[in-house]
Image 1 (cartoon, rainbow, N blue to C red):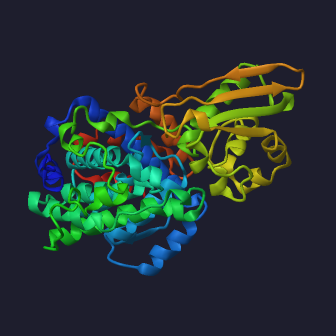
Image 2 (image 1 turned 30 degrees about the horizontal axis):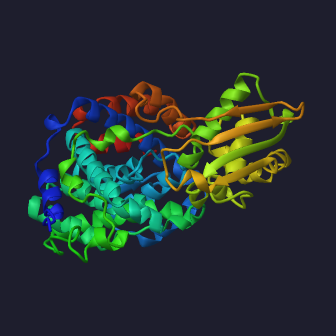
Image 3 (image 1 turned 90 degrees about the vertical axis):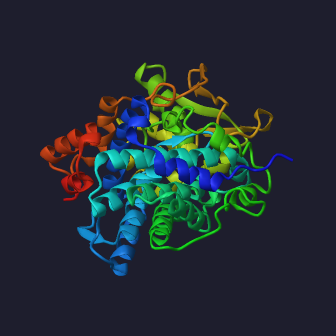
Length: 452
């Protein structure tokens, strides 16, 4: 039997030694784009459903005035700030994802910004922390695809490990302490896929941020865990996959070849990733004059067996369920001038126009298409009242790899999140800082620019 490589310690070794100069420029450049996307969602998120409860929770918890809680006029401990800001970011459902690992860049930046603000970390260290943390959670996610099939929300589970790595990097922990940070985080990693459409789902990213950061802070102070917790026979990888780890050796063998940051897709619309191409395709048909809301008799959308395990709500009862509702998303694409968080508001859910259109959307589950998050193509048939059918099969939506958004292309998304919240001069200044983040001497400057 081939011995299992020392995955936990080797990840810690690579994390502790990696420097920005060793990271390819396209990776670091795109990381700045992802940072802007994530920051915009953190700032917009306090207005999303459930966020007010989280704000009250962290206010009640109190704590040292170390880091900003966006939208709350509050500073608290780095752990509570990371929990709140990560929950806010997830509440928008704008989070940027990659597949097949099913993890998000949004899980990491709340930790990087909160701890970076407190430690006055520079932008180079922040970028280093993001790239190695993303590689950690992504490589673990790829090896643990079976965990997602079993029902885990890998975004949160592997995300706790990524957050531990990000915090360890900012804290400048050595290899030994970074190993223990990973080990402690492994005991706190969790997430349940079934929670999509609920407030518990949005908080899972917040818990991952808090737990990973806590793990690194404990390790920094000498707390320890099993140094082979990932790869051991009764360790995390075997536990969450029921022993079906997919190429564990690939976690190390494929590390950085290339960095998985370049597989992160940026969402255009504030709802589930799996709805993005349905919305985009419907908007394109509408803008081309091929279809309109008043012409629709029925819309049939064929999907694979995986799709309804995440997009669960045919008739949404609240804002979060609407973000995971195929009929609602398609109705929004036919009725709304722009797809914004308000498109999934209670007013739109209860709108007679939306109700009427949702009732015309029929989801057909094609068991013969298999069970996979990606690698399949939906079929959308718009049946018109004049008897004509318009059929499309959207492969990808814009901003998805290999066609990644540039920094400038992502500014529109950032502005859509922060306009009305920040004065124009602060929007411009924050974009300037993020564009040249590697030259920023203090992450607190960026945070203070947007914390109004």
